[in-house]
Image 1 (cartoon, one colour):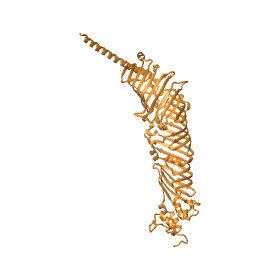
Image 2 (cartoon, rainbow, N blue to C red):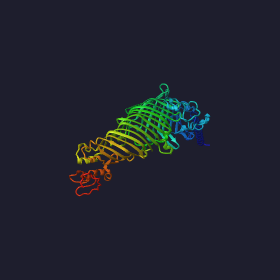
Image 3 (cartoon, rainbow, N blue to C red):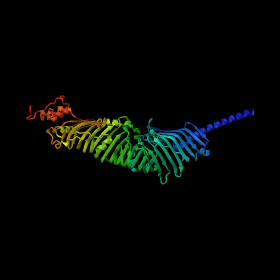
Length: 617
């Protein structure tokens, strides 16, 4: 055999040997990696994309398409899938599993059941421990106390743990995602997750960041190794659209006790507004969040409406919580609460919130809100809401203008309001609104509505009294009414007004969804205002107020005048007064009111009342 042919044969045999060795080597790497991961975590891992050995720029083992699964009976499966896991170190150290230089995790996706805690231990873990899983563990009342942060234990799994593994100098995560799921639905997520942990004396210095699903908010967090005891300095910066353009920045002392994370001595600010307090997140069983904060004056941007909210009710059922917040002032949408104290509670997706203290528009406000917002997810009915509101000595004009654009009523108001509604959007809430309201407003006026104006116009033709000049407003000493609310419409049968020029009784309806009103008012001039006028002005001329509440129309109820008691009273003054002419300004006034005209014009026939004694035939 020629030397050249022998060389080619030896080269081919060598390549084949290297290939076989490499193939068996990668299989050994995969097997070793799976065993090591199982020993470290107590879960079964698979490396579906194989492994490779990289020699440049440093020696590294690369595992592709790495994953693990854990079943939670009745609630779903937790999974972690990693596109690429790269471990860097010296060759002998890598083979021995020690002194790792770095671990790089690319595109990890963690999917976690939103109600994992309902299943107790995952499938297989409880059996290994000799106990059956509890499908619905009872909540621990002690967790609502201040000391519940000391609970120990790990949520999620139980299983064997191997010996402590090698401590890498650096761990980096890029392109990650955390998904909270219910079935195939993602109820909450953190995306674009990146993190880096660097080994330091006493632990790791960790920097992490990510944004919520849809990009609504983003947070960056940095944690240093503990300085003293068990707390570690933590700093954070979060951009939250609901808090405005300024970021929420601050620091706290973080401590982890089992599955409970405590952020103590929290100090933060939104722009120039400071906050202090504490936060506890307990994952011992069902997640529980407790927030205690105190802050200065906070300005919130205008809300986009409940219908624009993307919050999944399933997320609210996945944890419970309590919150207590005290603010020097809270301003939103033109409204300003001062010295506000708010208490909130979230249980099984139901919200209970109370404004136990607050100043509003020069007065005081108290409110309680109950909302069964999780009902929508159960499919039985839309979420239900109930609101109780007490107002004392509140200026009505700034309150109503800011809340609903209703700028007609000014005065000092007191009210007790009980409302119920169902739905998820503002339109649904307005259409379903029901309840009762008792309202009293003192020392004010109806802007743009001149109820005595019709009577004043009559009076100006008979007696030019300067007290009766139209002011495009109705001054009053007191307005009171009780409203019954059903299907988004507030109706009253006992509206009462008392003022310096007129008193009035009335009935009417306010359509809260369409923002329209329809009232019938029967005003009478007061004795002082009508002292110099004929007896005619003891009668009531019915006034109609209707249309949009930001531009109402005011008119006389002509049908009632022509057919009712008003005309009989007019007739009592004498049928001759119904005739027009220069000597009788009342007749000319009636022509102008009821469609008559001068110069031979016609007017609607009038039915005179009984003639007065001594009247001419």
